[in-house]
Amino acid sequence: MRVSVAGLVLVNPIIAASGTFGYGIEFEDIVSLEKIGGFVTKGISLEPMAGHSAPRMVQTAAGMLNAIGLQNVGVEEFIEKKLAPMKRYPLCKVIVNVFGHTAAEYVSVIDRLNDTEGISAYELNVSCPNVQAGGMAFGADPFALEDLVERTKRVAIQPLIVKLSPNVTSIARMARICEGAGADAVSVANTFRAMAIDTETRRPRLTNVTGGLSGPAIKPIALRMVYEVSRAVEIPIIGMGGIVTPEDAVEYMLAGATAVQVGTASFADPRATERLATGMEAWCRSHDVANVASLTGALEKPPAEGGN
Image (cartoon, helix red, strand yellow):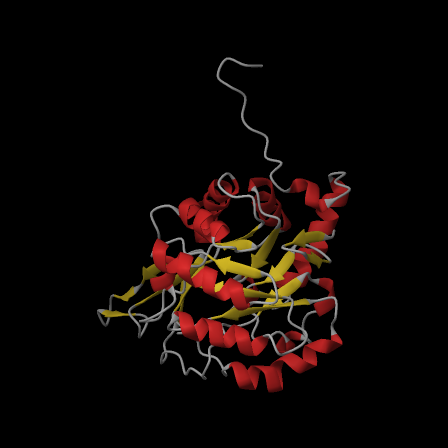
C-alpha cells in the first residue's frame, strides 16, 4: 500500500485534508494515526488569525460550504503546542499547510518551520476562496503564483506542495507554472467558490456571504481536473474532492493522482480516513492489485469508434 509523493514514502495513499483534521493530534483518540499516510494541518500563518464570525459552515446538497477564514493559532504556538505531540506517530507524515497575506509572510512562516523537527512537507495554500487578501489572489494570478513558488522553494528544506485553486480558467496551466517554478507536487484542488441563501430571511447563510464548496457534489469536476493536470505535468498529484468510498480514491488514482486527500467525509464520520485506508487495501486485494501505486494513471481509454 506504500506510495511515494515528492520523496515522501507514505504507508498508504490516504491523507487527511487541511482544515478538516485540526492539527492532527486532536484526532489521536479517534483515528489510529499510523494507519493513514499522513495529514495536512490547518493553514498556519505568521500570526494567529481569528477567522470569520459564525455562521461559517453550511450543509448543502451532497456537500458543505465553509468560510472559516483560516482561523489558526499562528506558527509559534503551532510549534510549541501542536507539533511536538505528533512525534508519538512517526509513520504518519505531517504536512504543514502554509498561508500568508504577502509572499514575504509565506517565506517567514516556512523559514520558522525549517527550524523544527517532525515536518515532512509544506503545502502552500494559494487557493483559499474565503479571505480578502492572499490565498486565492496568488492562485489565480499566474505571475504572482510563479513568484511565490520560486521564493518559497528557495527557503524550504522540505518538499513543497502547492494546493491549486479550481477557480481558474485552466488549472493545467497553473500546475505547469508551479512545476516550472520548482514545486515538488501539486494538490488538486481546493474548494469551489459558492454561496447559499436563506429564503426566509433573504440573507446569505454564511456571514462571509460566499465560501468554499466541498464534498461529493464537486467530485466529477475535481476528478476531471486531476486528469487534465496529470497530462500537463510530470510532478506528483494529490487528488481531492468528495472522496467518501475506497472506489472514489481509486478513481482519482486512475485519473493520475499518486495519493488523495480526504476532507468533508471526516465531518460526517470522524474515522473516515482510517476507514478509507482499510477499505482501499481490501479493494486492492479483491481486485488482485499487488501494488497500489500501479493504479496511478492507469486509466483505460474507451475504444475508438468502430473498434472492437
